[in-house]
Image 1 (cartoon, rainbow, N blue to C red):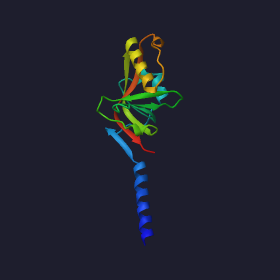
Image 2: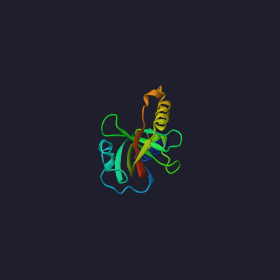
Image 3: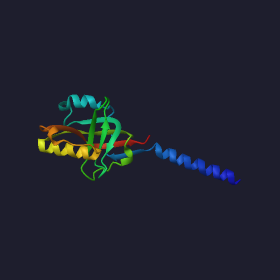
Image 4: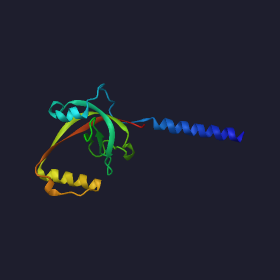
Length: 157
């Protein structure tokens, strides 16, 4: 009889674990757009999408370790990714989201960075990755595109 109870408890525990793993984590407003746009298409023609509501999806390849205020989403082509950035505290993305699939609805914004700002950004990225940074490698300002989300769904797989 004791074996039956133990087996039942183990099965119930497994059901709870598997149901938790399949849950979604939602942030912000519900996602309304039906179709996602490939990140490569957005980055090829960013002017077509600036200031409009878009939907993207992909694998989360990076999450802010400090405040959970941004995540990077892998694109549909190798070495392409886009940052999803919120104001600190608006949404807090968990570090455990890395490797999960996300659906994001938001606005594409452009950040025009001076050479000094671009140098600071590249330096911070290298420090975060533990890589060497050469300040002479940044010779001019850059424009960075990112998504300001209004709704995010992270699918625990």
